[in-house]
Amino acid sequence: MTAGELENSVTRERFTIRPGGPGALLLEIRVPPDMIRPPLHLHRGQQESFEVLAGQVTVQTGRERRTLRPGGRAAAAPATPHTWWNSGDGEAVMLAEFRPPGQAQSFFETFCGMAAEGRCNARGSPPFLQIAASARWWDMYLAGPPVTLQRALFAALGPLARLRGYRASYQRFSAT
Image (cartoon, rainbow, N blue to C red; front, top):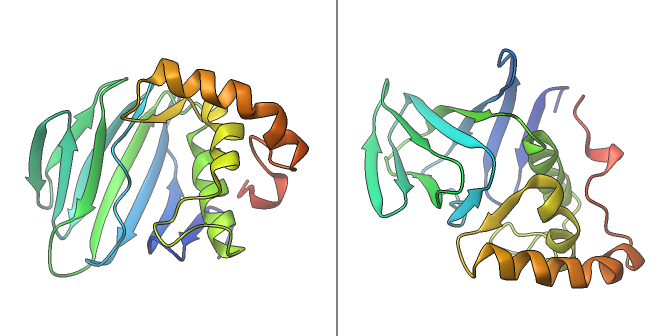
């Protein structure tokens, strides 16, 4: 992969970092129909928006599901549980924008880097202690259990994660 390009060999997602303008991270995402969808998750302080360029993508925000085709758009407000997946028969291409960018790029770099090193499970998740070490940095959490419980658990596990060598981010995965 070249600078600005990331690939998760487990989930089968390919990312290209695009110029996003001030205060945004913009990713072009390409996925086959048999991709592994992201878990229902939330970003406490970021809006994530989606625009389909090719194919068909279903976006779930809260309890609402919308099927988008080229030109279709959807957004998940901060702290709103959401996920998305390729719901078509061919490759889907979309733009995902994170506003403000926060540490979203670090998230994608770490997940793709860990997958390349064979450190993710069959669903594309890195070791639990990696999540404990990074969740606060990324400000990203699963839709359940409650974020306050996740934050408390990750804070308690933080020293163990660091002792085992896990960090919030890794220079070796940095695309910039």
